[in-house]
Image (cartoon, rainbow, N blue to C red; front, side, top):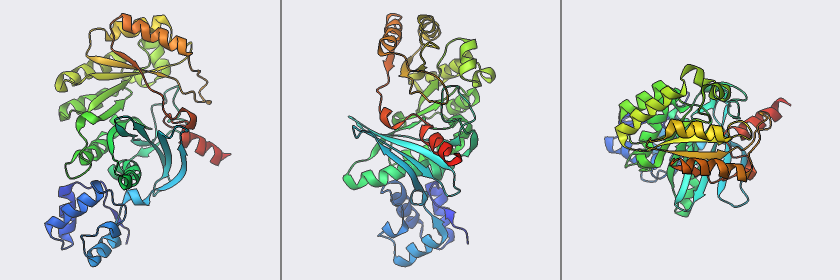
Length: 352
């Protein structure tokens, strides 16, 4: 009998499942806490269940966080970034990263296997789109790390859904996973410590607004003129960036949280003063923050990283225009921590 995946079930779903097997209702809450609070990756760890109950669960269910296999693993020289490429049960692979900041640990989650957005500078779409990740597979990325951090008394406290894939095209599964992580019987991570990033899929932003969670929204902008953004990000032809910004404005009005606009700086492409002016003209007066990201070059894409001096000139121009702007602190540059790079290199080697 094929096992059913238990990770990704909400508490009401878990109660329905286990009561149908003859378990008391309170047992479902115990299992829920083992999965999402105590980060169990096997049923044997669930010590307040009888041996027979654990055996029955193991016979009928699998736990995604315990089923994934590590294909590749890298740690940065400074010890602050840990990246893994995980193989899922169907042989597909997905990468995820944990970063140690002064405020704690954050995890960058992928939402899809591959990506259909085909952004000109990004490694995630090099081998095309494969499929959406299930809630269990999204959760398994976090709990791969959390099950290890827990042994040292640490925990993941922040989540960014900025890995491979377009979250707004898998929004139902993404939000189900985040709801579980938000639960006070799980990781109890606040909405304000969660960020979902999008290339500007307007219907997804609008749906997120209707659902009224106080999750942080990030828009991958990367250009503020139609011609350049369409060249860098084909999604702009379907959802032009003024429409995405308008949808983000509505989201900001709903939850009062600043929208983040991510802007990858590509040498000689979008890092000129004219680009900074277009960006300032677009975002001036809005409740937002611009996060400048010096490019982590992908060899297959042919773009270069601007000099530190050029990054600073761009930054200073925006500051003079009274734009709230930061430059992303780089982590994991020595291990190709930009999304998609590890999976792309592994697939390239496999084909070779």
